[in-house]
Length: 288
Image (cartoon, rainbow, N blue to C red; front, side):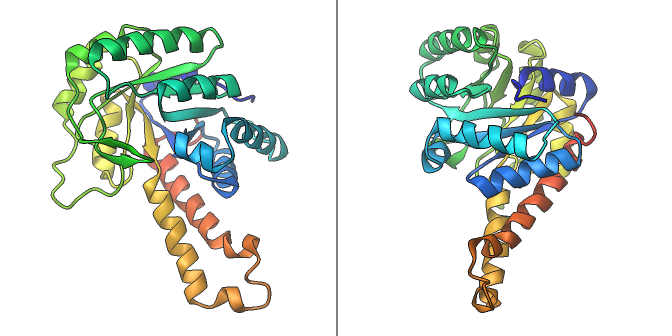
């Protein structure tokens, strides 16, 4: 299957009670591993790309070229969306021009009137090209590539307003944060989530900060309309741990263990393990 927008896969997930993983990618290894596991488990998948990650990988066009060539060379047949994560106003247009199939415009830091104005404009531009749009109200806690949020709870009235602009997926702050969750984290606010689902008229909802949220909370969130769960930090931690063990064991000093293909292999396998766990937990296995 060709690269697709996130809209159809998330409507299907909403209607059938499961979630689709957004796995944030950082390089070739991340992308290849994620696509291989999605194909192995016959699961739809969303490749998330932050503006910082896009810059690191050489720009939006290079990211799209890499994904297209991997999809072709690996014979990937499951639905794959390439999604700009926490895009700025300017970044949203650059990613759209480069061929991204889904765009998140994060206007949560603007006054609501400006968020509405910019979101409406980006929805029109993206829909003209068949590209899905994610919007946000109530910033997500923590920091991701310089995007910092205090973890506010979304105002349902503002959620209803933004959702009415024709967005295809919607992120609302419900106590979730980017990065590691602190020991005193209060958990997700399901009352707010339930109200957001009601006022947004069943627009597929997005849960940012999927790393570290207990499985029972994830599954309850899915039952309340969450259809996309973002995972990033957990993959980075798993990759780093596996790479560290390889080097600490002196494997890089044995024969040609310093070859990047060998050096990074344990980290890649660790990524695959986490992606398998998430696709199984979210219920998207064999839903392609």
